Image 1 (cartoon, rainbow over the protein chains, first blue to last red):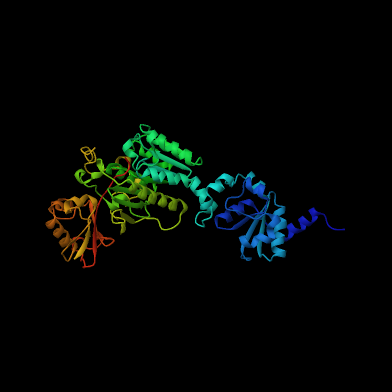
Image 2: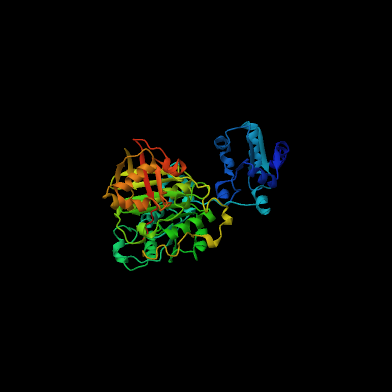
Length: 393
Length: 92
C-alpha cells in the first residue's frame, strides 16, 4: 500500500533542512535568496520583504530564472511549511540544488512573530496604459514607475520654471507634488507660466496649478503651500519631501534653502534664468558641492538683477524647467549621471551649452560641517542679509 | 588671444558682446585687460583690494581658477575663460 500524503511529507521533512523564521530574518539581511512558493493571490496579500516569488506550480520551469546557481543557498516558504517542504525536495532531488531549506511554520508563523511584511502594490489597468511608454523602458519599468508614484517632490514656485517642471513631473506620475507660492496669476505671467491660463488671472497660483495637474493626472496629489518660503517655515515644509526643485527668484531664499537642504540632506535641483541665458545644477548634500561652495557670497544687490523685474524669453524657463524635471526623475530612479558637481550654462541665442566643474569647498561655511551642527539661527545667513534685496523689490 | 565668455549681467558693459578676446599670459592679466578695455566691468570683477570679487567665479575652460593658481593661472591662446557671477531669477 502506498504511504499517505502525510506520511510522505513526514519522510520528506526528515530528508530536507528546515529553518526557523528568526534565522531566515537574519539571513535576509545578509542577502540570502528567499523564495515564496505560494500562489499569486496569496503573494498579493503580503510576503516577506525582499523575497522572490515562484509559485510551486511553476517551480520547475521558473526556478532557474531566479536561482541560476544551483550551489546557491535557497530558503523556501509557503503558508505553513508544507508546500515549501515538497518544493525543497523537488529542488534537491529532481533539479540538483545543493543547499535548500524550508522555513518552518511558513508565512503564518512569520506574521505571528510580528516580523515585517511587504504588501505588493499593483498598478491598475489604467495606470499600465497611462505609463506604458515608461514601462517599456528598462530604466523605468514597473519598479521605476512605482518609485515615481511614491516620490514626493517640492516645487518652489509655480512660475516660469515651476510650471513646466510641475506639468511634466505630474505627467510622469510623480505621486506627490508640493507647491510653494503665495502669488496670484497675472496676465504677464502667461507668456511663460504654462500651468496657468487666461481664465485664471487673479486666481492663486497654487490653486491654478492644482487644477491643471488634477486634470492632467489624477494619480498626483498636490500639496499646496500658499506662503513665501522663509526662515520661519522652511523647516516645517522641507522635511516632508525627497527632492526640491528650486526656481527661486532671490538670493536670500536660495541661501536659506541651501542651508536647510544640507542640514536635512535633501537634494536640490536648481535653475536660474535671465534674458536668454539659463543655469542648472544639482546640489546633493555631502555627495557634491552645495550652493555656498559655488557662490560663498551673493553679489551686491545692484549686480543681482534677479531681485527686480527683468526680461526673459518665454521659452527659456520651459527649457530649463524641463531639464530640472529630467534631473528630478533621474534622482528618483537612480539612473544616469546626475548634474552633481557640474554647472550647465545654456545660451539660447547662441544655441550653446557650456559646462563647468563645481568643487566641494573643504572650508564651506555649511557643508564642510556635520548636518547636526547647523543651527536654526545660521540658516540662510550671510553678511548684510537684511539689507540685501531691500532696495531692489 | 584667449576667448572670454561674458555673462548676461556684464554684457551691457562690453557693448552687448557675448564673447570677447583679450591679451595676457595669465587669468589676472587677461581680466585686467578686459577691465582696461571696458571700464564698466572693473568694479564687478575686482574688489578694492585688487583681488577677484568673491561672488564672481572664473573658469579656465571648465575648471575654477581658484583650484588652479587663481589670477596667476597660465592661459593659452586656445583657452576659454568663463566669467560666472551668481544668478537667481525665475519663479515670479
